[in-house]
Length: 337
Ligand code: HEC
Ligand code: HEC
Image (tube, rainbow, N blue to C red; front, side, top):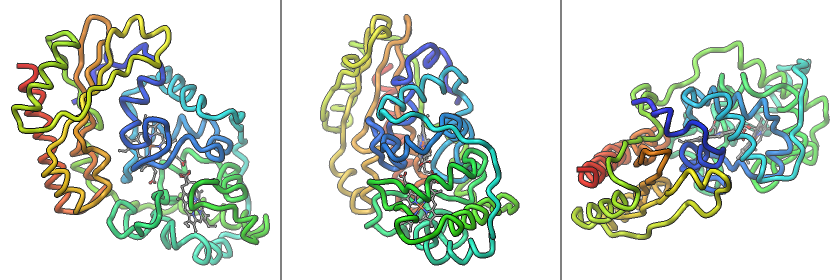
């Protein structure tokens, strides 16, 4: 199912962010299943061009989806919104190719980078979406051999990242770690050499096709829809956790959006069971359904747990994600009856 464009068109970056990104990158950009986006060091090294291309192309085979459904204007307002998290001036990079000794870069990479980014730059052991990632690492090391990354990041940006590091993440400054600028150039050349290689592992083609966010139109008003959802929650023996209004922070657009409400609910048995399998299920549990008004239409949306399966690559959780999608479907069917 494609996203109904009217659900997103003409709305502020914050809206677009909440609907498409917050589930993974956190409501304030402080990270979750996705790397943090609000860190000053990240925003000081990432150009707008890099952000634009990353969002548009995603990271094929990784968790980061490609957002082909958002317009260029949507992406621009999204980026403007992301920029509100930091005062740093967006850097600009040329497309100049950094020429280094890639073979030496490979040696250094194996010594200094492979433990987190994988021997072949796959982003941690395996595909980086497996359970083999050390739990002590709070942030998933991105895949550097990924065509989406390589198409978005310029050599200069990669170099800048290695020089500066990202304070607040496991990614440190390698200038501080004792590498010379020449060493860093060699590593950049090595990373760039991935571009000539094919064969990036795709976690699952089936789930790649699953939409990230499911949006259903409600025939009721926001208030009625929220009430119906509350009833559906209790008839399914779920516990209502809270109902939260999203309207408050929004400016001019708020006049148009009479309502933006999130309904949180949970089945504690399910949550308990799932948390034992992997604490990262916190990403889609408790259940979170957003009801929102756009013009004269009311939409109900949720992040698709089945799409989230790509993250886990764990058969026990795969089943749970599929079940969770059915739970959402049942809840929404009942509420919109
Ligand atoms: C299903 C989870 C998920 C969703 C939804 C998602 N991302 Fe990501 N995103 C990730 C992950 C995971 C990465 C790290 C890439 C990797 O592991 O190779 C990432 C990487 C990124 C990066 C690169 C960060 C860096 O350090 O270079 C940007 C920028 C980004 N995402 C922005 C967005 C935006 C904006 C949205 C919404 C339009 C979004 N993402 C939606 C999971 C997600
Ligand atoms: C201790 C683990 C660790 C080590 C060692 C490490 N990194 Fe990282 N790296 C990370 C993490 C985690 C991130 C994501 C940081 C963030 O959230 O912004 C990252 C981000 C990056 C990025 C930005 C990728 C993107 O999608 O924006 C590049 C490039 C990178 N690392 C290259 C390297 C290279 C080259 C080395 C070796 C010289 C190295 N890293 C060593 C953990 C590590």
